[in-house]
Image (cartoon, rainbow, N blue to C red; front, side, top):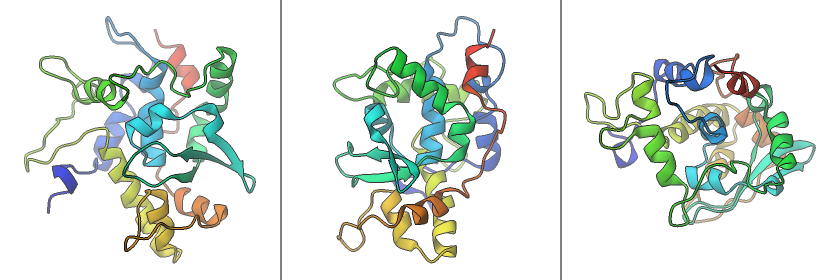
Length: 225
């Protein structure tokens, strides 16, 4: 059965390829023009389930400590409900705290400050970098992955949201917190907005997300040669 809009989640092996690609390794590509958002956006998409435009709009003020739990506050996607998503430990392990200090030192407001917008949106720039366009190869292709598989299903940056959804569905059901899954995805239930569950409940649902590469590090990204 086809996924929504003909898209599917990445397989475990595809996730391994993505998060062990050149962005997360030790060597730059020839003529590569690396940006900080190249490193952070796929990670944030995988660990929060947020869309590119939501991530592009994140500001430092959207990082909040609620009930002793650090969260991202998403409020920017028209069809998706505002929500708080706990920050997964893997993001701290990857150097998020150091990166936040870097953004503050440069006196920027947006977390992904070097991701430019096009007509007020960030998703187009992300799509071209991640999936390619015309003869221009995207990060997907450079990791040896196709845009469309043999069944005609597409993979794109939004596929990482499907990976997030698949995994939190399992943890939410196991903990008897189905509504927490809907809340974290910004969805309504039977047309009704879902009240925010307890912060520790949200954290319990998000924490089991599978860590693909424990060696991912922003400092390592900066030191690539």
